[in-house]
Length: 410
Image (cartoon, rainbow, N blue to C red):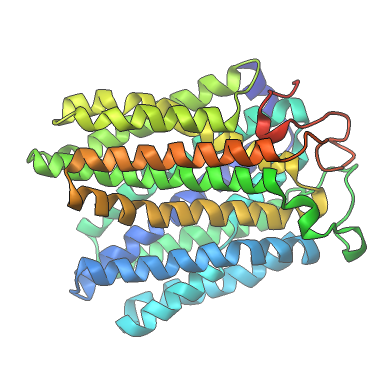
């Protein structure tokens, strides 16, 4: 745990992770808040609510790289101001918007979502040395897991006590507060010895968005597609068993084991390749479908839980090391888009598999999606030459093997 203490001792790191956790909990709960509003306040179907969530997710996926590029060129505070104002307007007006307007407004709100995750990852890359970066990204992944455990659950609980419109206001207020907190903190997005982001210093996209980066983004997409599919498969399995009320317990076990796995992995002396972690995650997910009641399902998801945070943290670490400092915002935006797309597609793909077979087919489909992404990532990384990492003064002293095929020296 010494590496974690060293990371948290970095000036500004603890408040950054704390503010990020708060904002991400609200951002992960925004889809649930909109779902509860459409279903309970507008008295419409879950399909209608799903369309609103899909519009929001599509906006987030498309806006990530654009906002990241703006950060590279205009700076952090400018972009945060440009996103905070639309969020205030959107969440304040949600309770009075007709459904059709809400659909379009959700897309716009996603397009201009406060880029908390991308900014946090950029700051971690700038504030840490290569030897401590893996532990820092592990803490970031653990914070992400905690946000997924807390955010939606709080929204569901509050929606049962107060009106869905008030819940939407609360979610929006926390998102805005988190973005404002990061703006006040103003963490560095480049190390002191890294080049600035002026147009003359920006490499062409094809120089850094090559096979290795595509491999990492593909594996990030596959990981989140697997995870969103697992959530749906858990609900479907317990619904068939007449135990759907226990789904929250199973998902909580999944989240807790992911936190444990992340902490253990971050303390290891050497990392593992991303494709190997994702492949193992896919392999242990498939047999979880053999569980048919909630106690056995709790046991069955432990393996996948232990590998979740390590897999996501290696994706973030690889993106930071494959990207020049001058385009780090755009790269982390692409990473956020890949993760969002995976979450958006995982549930419908796994849902089709469940409808066509049995709930166990959902776990199989999710696991196979992870395995396929791991295989594609491995093959893409093998195609690229074993070149040095993208040149930046802070990382030019060592080589980066294709897609972390060999663990870098700490």
